Structures are given as structure tokens and as C-alpha cells.
Image (cartoon, rainbow, N blue to C red; front, side, top):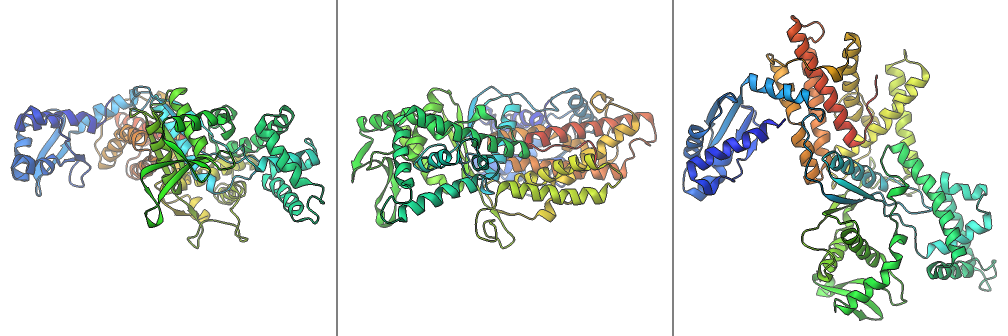
Length: 586
């Protein structure tokens, strides 16, 4: 099954070639939606100047050359050179029938690529906060979509599991005991564990004489040396620390409904054995040089204040390695070991300069060939009602678990009011699905690189452009089939559109594949969210004006049931690609 736009493209291109010659056969026909027809062809406007014709005259010649028998009812020139095409109802019917017979509701399986996706990336022994929300759910939506399109997605959860703070964290873990309640905070309240370790370290540093507060700071620094030297006993304690944090991460991921698992962990420590070789190779190739004791890469085009070159520091003056070294190692690993065709980095927008410097260095070193495309999926901020970055009243980053709990509680109030007839357990299950879905949809419905205000009351509303509204539409379709005693997955009766609302709904359904393909190529989940909202609106209009179970004839009833079944399959597929559950009832 192909979408109308995909089916029309070669037909319009053939007409352009007939008018302008074979050199123009691959010209973009510039097909766009139109309020005056089913689709608008804008190619004449784009090509007229190149070929020395008036756009309207060129459009008229393209119309004369179009062969659209059985496809379009009319093809008319309008305005300065638009071509408006109106589909035949029977063509829409035939495409809808093909869609109903397709288990993938039109979504193609593309040529397989290896695509590592770097997303989420929390820190060991630290609480996930609201800043982790967007990278986690945007990255997961992209992973789901690209897998659905047939690609081999390699999730890379680049957690912060290495560095100097781990000396004090290990020492604190040893002092409280690995099986103690204090150690258990790593699973339930990581920030409390981290802050307790930090308080000990700071107190020891300030103590007089130095080291009199139990030498905690001295032992912590010594522990870092042992850790970096590969001391097995220290590594065992470090693994325990990481394991406790993994239990916390997994609890958050289960709550959010994302697909990350322990198998996807690719922390900073994974690349430790590569760091020295990365530096040595860069230095041997003359790409990195020593500046003020540090090994640096100076790239053309990267300058700071007063025109001074900005260095990418790959080895610090004390011999330690930083983020740049690790990030260069990840590029090398993903290209050489994971055989990446594309690499997606779903991280904050402020990291753009750093990433570009890393990629340019990797290209210069020969580690990032032109055939491999690194892409920065820039993540914007979540704002409070004051339009500042969302934080607690004390100014600290808002805990992600707290935010999700509040969303579920707000959804519980809505569901309790809307469905008091359901039992308590059922309402609680729906509230969890609705609350988490509301947060995810609110985030995914805006461009990933833009900011948005976190408004919980609006998010959980059953009306408007919200996740709960989409979930409600799915539940409504399911209720139709429950009343009819039919299986929506088995509904394959022929479609015959007659009413405007039927026609609009069928056309919208036929556009699903194009949207999913666009999300996979442009990395913009908000396109899918927007499409699902429009589909939900079209179904609501159809439901109000076109009786389904009480249709005038059995043929009309069956046709409308098929359209309803297609809505259900498309909505549940689309919501699943966004990582949002669809409750059985609401």
C-alpha cells in the first residue's frame, strides 16, 4: 500500500518530463495539502524561472500532460500557478481497502541501517531530574520509530559512572555498609546518598588540622587513584554502587514506560581502555598538541573571545581525561565496532559546540567517515509557570519521580470524577496510563529543540491537544466494537466514502505512513503527535455526523466499521511509537 502523495509523485514527475524534457523527470513536484482541493502541486512555481515560462502557463501545460484517469476527479490551475487535484472517491476507497489489509497500516520497511542512539544518560548515585525527561522520552520515541521502520537501533545509555566523585561515594558506601538502609538510598533517594557523601568530604576538607575528621577526604582521593588504577577490590565496591543505581534507573524507566534496559548501558567507564590510545593517535597524527601542559586539539573555525582559538582538551595537565576524550572514544567505537550508518545524540542544545568539535576532530583523525552521519537532536528546556527552568521552590532541579507521581495523582482525580462506576483498581490502572501518557504527550507534541511550560492541569485534561484526549478517542473506538461484539482487527469490509466526514477521515488515515517516515528521517516526534491529534479530531467529527452501528444500510455500517477499525489500529500504533499506552476504557 502506498500513500496518495507517494502514488501521485511519479505521475506528476512524468507530466513535468513530458513538458520540459527528461532532464526534469526527477524534479520535486512539491505536493502540499490544500484547503481548496485534496492536494496542491506547486512545481510550476518552483521551476518557471529556470525554464523561462510564466508559472501559470507552465502549470497549465503540466495539467494537460497529467494522466490521472481513475485517480483524480479534477485537476485545475489556480492562483499564480498552483495545480489543485481532487481525488476520485473510488480511488480513496481502494487505497483505504489496501490499508485495511496491511498489518502495518501502510508504514514501509526501509533498507536496514545500524543506528546507535545516545539518550537519557543519568548519573550514578544521583537523582534523575526534570532535565532527564526530554532526552529520555524523545530518544525512546525515535528508537521505537526507527525500529518500526526496519532499522537496527542500538540504544546507548551513556550514564555518568566514572570520575573523581566516585572516590568519596565508595568510601561513604563502605562506611555505611553495602547492605545498610543508607546504601538503600541509592535506589530510593540517590540525592540523599550523594549529599551525605559530599557533606562528609567537605567537612573533612575544612577540618583543622587537615585530616582530623577521620581523613575521609584523604581516603576518598586515595580511592580515586585505586579506582583508576584498576584495583580489583575497589572495582568491586564501584560495581556495587553502579548496581544499586541501576535498580533506581530501572524503576524510573518502568514508570515512564521507556524501553531502556541494563543491556543498553554504555557508561563512561566502558571506554576507559581506549582513552590513552585516542590521545596517542591524535598526537601521532599531529592533530593534538601540548598547550600549557594539556593535550589539546585546535580546529579551524572555532574561536572564542578576542578571536582566540578554542581548544578541545583531550588530556588535562594532570594527566586525567575529560568528556572530550570519552566522546571521541564513543565515536570511534560506534563506527568501528557497532558499524554505525547514523549516530543520534539526543542531548541538550547547549552541547552543540562541544559535539561539533568532537565530530570535526574525529573526521580529521579518520574515525568518522563521510558515509556515517552524526546528528544532534537538540533538547530544549522544560519551564515552570514563571517561564524559567522548572525547579523546586528551593531552586533545586525538580525530581523526575516526584513530577511523575504528581501527574498520576492529577490523572487519578480526573478519572475518579469521570468514571465513578469503575472499581478502584481499574481506575488506578487507568490513572497511571493517563498520567504518564499526559506528561509524555505534552513533551512530544512540541518540537524537541523548543521550550515548553509544564502545566499539569492542562496536560491531564480530556479535551484539547492532550494525551488523555487521544487515549479517550481510542477507548471510544474500542467501545464501538465491544457494543457490536466484533473484533476490530478482523474488520476488513470494503470502504465506500460518501459523506465529507468519511472522506476527510479516510484521507487522514492514508497519510499515516508519510508521517512515520518523516519522523524517521527528520527526527521530529512532534510531527507524529500532531498527526494523531488531527486524526482524533477527524474521528470525533466522523463519529458525530456518521452513525456507525445505526447506519442506514449494512454496507454503510460495515464501511464505517472498517474506517473505525483503521482509526484504532493507526492510533494505537502511533501512540506506541511515542511510548504512550492506550487504555481499554476511560
